[in-house]
Image 1: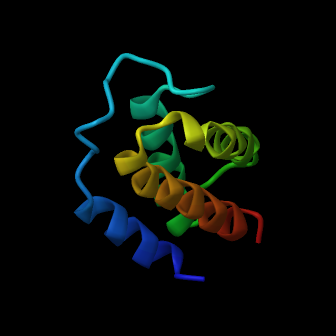
Image 2: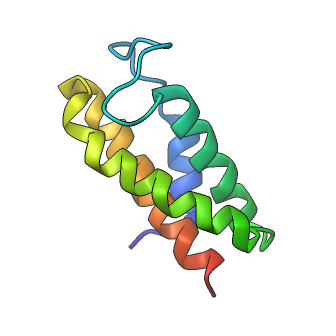
Image 3: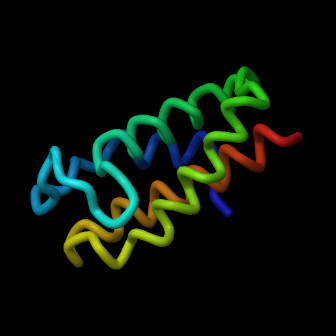
Length: 96
């Protein structure tokens, strides 16, 4: 598995998918908010500042995103699959 820091850097290099319509929900998630939340929690985890409350919110957000992947346009799925990996790495770091 890639390091949390490598996944954060990769996320920063990737543009938001043009096929995703902001303001619409895809499955169970708002595509903008889920990305912002997971990225924010990942940053906190990378600096050792992810609280237990934030960790408790990260897990269900990741699970909802994972369940919703098929609702995204095919072109956008790799971006959101990466967010799932980022969330998993943040959870791993935050729970240690």
